[in-house]
Each structure stands twice: as structure tokens, then as C-alpha cells.
Amino acid sequence: MPSDQFLSKGVKLQKVMGHIQFVNVTFHYPSRLTVPILEHVNFSVKANEVVAIVGISGSGKSTLVNLLLRLYEPSNGQIYIDGFPLRELDIRWLREKVGFVGQTGTSSLSYGHQAYAHEFISSLPDGYETVVDDNLLSGGQKQQIAIARAILRDPAILILDEATSALDSESEHYVKAIIRAMGNDVKAKRTVLVIAHRLSTIKAADRIIVLDSGRVVEMGDNTELLLKDGLYAHLFKIQTDALA
Image 1 (spheres, rainbow, N blue to C red):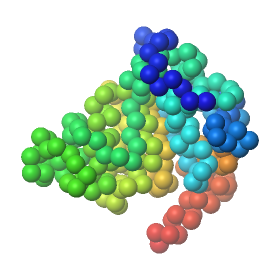
Image 2 (image 1 turned 180 degrees about the vertical axis):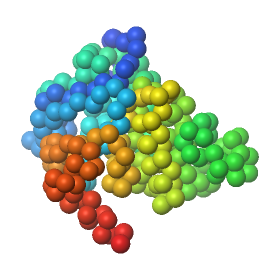
Image 3 (image 1 turned 90 degrees about the horizontal axis):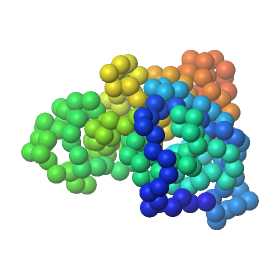
Image 4 (image 1 turned 45 degrees about the vertical axis):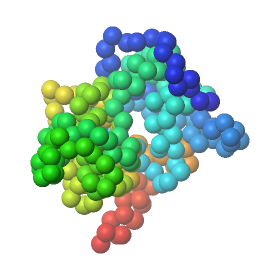
């Protein structure tokens, strides 16, 4: 069911470490109660881990994000942040602690260096003072700016949802570098969830969770999953062959 989007009550944790747990989570959209979008989903993300969630279209990837942001509540099961039930946390406070980058660009050019966006921002007519609009930047540049804006907030948890689907090859290279840097930057440690469109982007993730028809079917790093020769390896081969 949908959450109360304007609710400003509930628990506010003193410090968010970024440990995420999905425990036996099932979800149906209200208009399709007989069709589970997620079914008995179980996984845990350690604090400061970079984890990618992949799967074909309709596998439930973005629904996980909707639940984590409390846009909806699970039909069954529990989600925990640092061991505390997500449904008991203050929604507004929660969204201040979670950085989110979707497919749309944003208006902030701050922290361009950390988002590997400094070069093209400097080339804009007014540099870092540029007002962003839909006609000025490419889809890839908008994505880099969106990531820069999310980093500026210094969230404990950063979610990149389909953040590479609009990128050209050069911009995709930058995003790969960001993901690697997130895992190596000791001073700015945060938990990162990447809902990936291009599997080549997330090879450097600490772990990859593979969804199929709303269920977790595989987990491991890129090398482990390729050796398993399961769904991830199949999807990886399809994308690799398409680029050949």
C-alpha cells in the first residue's frame, strides 16, 4: 500500500550507518493484488558496501527502490535500516538521509569534481553558475549532474536507479569511475545501491543481486556470477554480443 507521503513523525536515528536488510519482503501494487511484483525477497547490504541490483525489465528492481524510499509499504515482510524497522522511521527524515538519482537531470552543478563532471561543466557558457535546462545538456551530462547533486547532500545511502540508461559511452565511463571511487573513498564512505541498465557499468560493485520475476535468484560479485553461468552470465553475454 502507498505510504503517507507527507508524514513527519516516527523515529529519527542519531546516525545512519547504512546497513540495509530486506526480510521475506513481498509486494503487490494496489491495483494488481493477485500479481506479486516482489516475492519473498531476502538480502542484506552491509554499511559502506557498493551493491548492484540487476534483472530484465519488470523483474522488480525499481520497486525495491520505491519500498526503500517508502513510496510504498511491503505487503508482507520487513525492511530494516541499521536493524530498525523502516516503517517506523520518519519519512521526511529518511529521505534526507538517502540520496536518489533517477533518469531526470537536476539543477545543481556543485561537487562536479566528485561526479567526474568538472570538465564539461567548466566548458558551459557560465561554468558552475549555469542554470540547467532540458535543452542545454545531453542525457549523459544531466545524469552526471544528478549524481553530483546527490553527492553534495552527503547521504548515508546513495541510490542510482537506472542511472546509466541515458548515458553515452564516454559518460558511462565516468559513472563507472564514480562507482569505483565510492568503494575506495575512505573519507566519504556510504552505502551505494545501483539499479543498473548496462551490466558493464557495475562490474566493480562489491556484490551483485540478480532479480527474476520478483525473486532473488543469484548473488555474488561479477566474477562469481559469470562462473555460475546462470541468468547474470546470460544477460551479460547478450549485452556483450550486442556491442560486438
